[in-house]
Structures are given as C-alpha cells and as structure tokens.
View 1 (cartoon, one colour):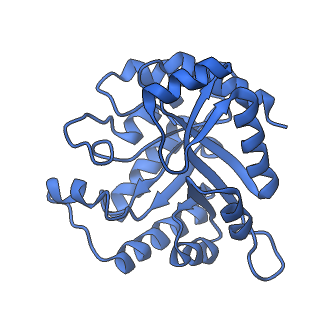
View 2 (cartoon, rainbow, N blue to C red):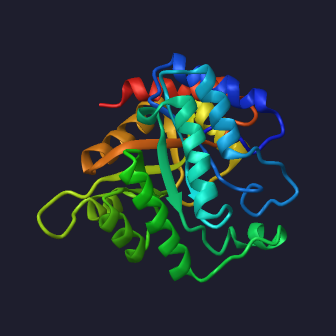
Length: 260
C-alpha cells in the first residue's frame, strides 16, 4: 500500500520507486477522502496517485484497494479505470472494488455524496465488476460478507480479504463445490529488521486487530502461510510508511524475498 494519507505526493513516488526496485509485484492506494476516522488529515486521490506511479514505473501493477462504488457514478468510475489502463497498460491494472462500510459513510455524507443501502452498493459493485471483467481487466471484490462473496463468484472476480486470519483465508478459498475460490489477503503490517526494532516500532505505533507484526523472517513465514492457504497476493500496509516511506517499503521488499 502506498502512503497516500498525506499532502506530500513525493512520499508516494519514493515508496513506489523503492517497491519497483525491490521486486514488489504491485502497489495499491486506499480510496478514501480522509484516513478512516480522521477527517482532519489529508488524503491523495487514489487514481491520481496511481497514474503518477504508473507513468514512472512500468513494471509494477497498480490499483485502488478498494475503489468505493458511489463516490463516483458507474460511468465515471469506469472512466477512471480506463484512464489508468491507458497509462499503465491493461495487464498492469488491478481493479479492486468495494461497497464501503459504516466507518466510511461519514466521508460520503460530509461531501454530500449519497450513501445508499448495502444492497444497492452491492449491486453497483456487481455492475462495475462485470463491465471491467468483460473488458479484460483483472478485478477483485473486497469484503468479508457472504453477500460480497456471492458477487465475486457471480462475476468471476477474486475476493480481497482485509485483516483476516489464516483460518478465514482457508475457508474463503473453498468454493463449496470442490473447487478453489480465488482470494487475496491485505492488511496492516509492522516489520522490524531485528527484535529490538520490532519492539521499538510496536512501542511507537501500537497494536490493532489483525496486525501482522514481527521480524522479516516472522512476517515472511506468516505471509507464506497465507499463500499456502490459498491467497494469491498479500498486500501489506506498513504502519510506518508515512514517517519513513523508503525504509518501510525496502523492509517489505526483504520480506518478499524471504517468503518460503
């Protein structure tokens, strides 16, 4: 994940360059009008940040995680993806979509953007995901509910699961008909290069539900287990990426190389 909760785009470009140089497969951006529950803080627009990254880094995949339906109308959201595809190339864009939840609803309301019932938002995800899939764009659907899983299955999209444990990935990867359902994992991480740094980072950034924390080897083992359980991607959001974007991403690159 790129450090877009800032008014400094240079942080984003520095982090993306470190990811591309270090062998990371893709970079992603949150699609929020402010950091969750922090309306006083800035946020760069996901598609604008990703377009800048794609123009400078041809190798890495780019995508929002997740683009929230309703912030833009269906056609406008499709146009945003079309613009990103034009810059990055169709094969380099991952179109991750989501409904948003009650925690993101205040963002909509603060700007006068409608926040319809969940069923309507799910229907919008299905419409847009179907259009993207028909155009050959890799499409993910984010969310943990059974209804979201059904939408992903109906359109043939990969599910993205935020902050879940190993058992949840294993369960989600079982389609119930003897086949494996495509899933990916994403979540917050805190990685130290040794035990002392892990403890220093924990003291500075604290703990939170679903956090994957530890040394490079410990986090690599955890992500490797997610992969063995069925996750085709692990998308890491380092808690320290705003204060040290290059170093945080370079550490994630070391994790990637250490994954079994």
